[in-house]
Length: 297
Ligand code: PDD
Image (cartoon, rainbow, N blue to C red):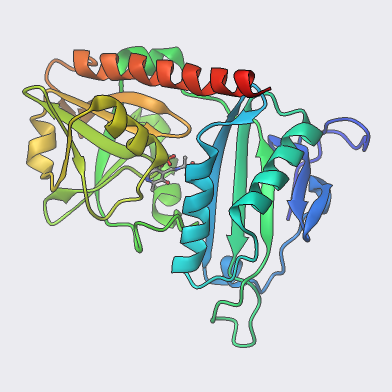
């Protein structure tokens, strides 16, 4: 694994491309510098691997149980033998947060397909857990909203958090100059999700979100619970263009208003009231989650 070395000092917290000094690899906590993957791992040569990403605030992983359950279920669905249960993963995560003094940031868990004789069949490979720095979207994006670009595509095995992001990574080279945040996937006139976020729309006070061909986001689940009534259903591309409000949700974004899709403004092109109300409620939920940790300690 190639890493840019910002500092060679072993005793200090070192930063390799936003990665913190210690990680879990080779079945133990080691220096991130020593983490490595076999060149013939099917995660690398066939793109057969899973991951998950958890946000850390005040040294605590937010909504941890949901992420661990999804990670374990992703491994099961891909027939990858992850020999760690929820408690073991949780203990490693807490140990890494302490060792890296990670007050705020992210935890990336990756489980690769492993090395097999035919270089194709999954074998169950390496578990990596890294601590990273995490920058959330700028205040301007929350205030003004962001633009999406439509793309005809459905993520293969969409309910599994695989590491296959080839298409959006390839497309992303154009996003900055086009001033777009991300893509909106649609197929046969039906939308599904963005490359790393779920999508919601509001029309006449009713909140809806796609039901199929998506990753079932932890943020999506929290937003559905907060909103009270959300229709999980098929949503057409035309329908979302004519919505009163659109927003996207993810661990690394919370709730981000979407104000333009392919050059079409969503209503007046400004974040709507229902979105702003949910953003506030989501923030309050996060504060409750954070204060529950303080009460436990
Ligand atoms: N992405 N859909 C896809 C395809 C995703 O990759 C993600 C998360 C989501 C939102 O899920 P959640 O609310 O659990 O973060 C939906 C992560 C953050 C990423 O790839 O960086």
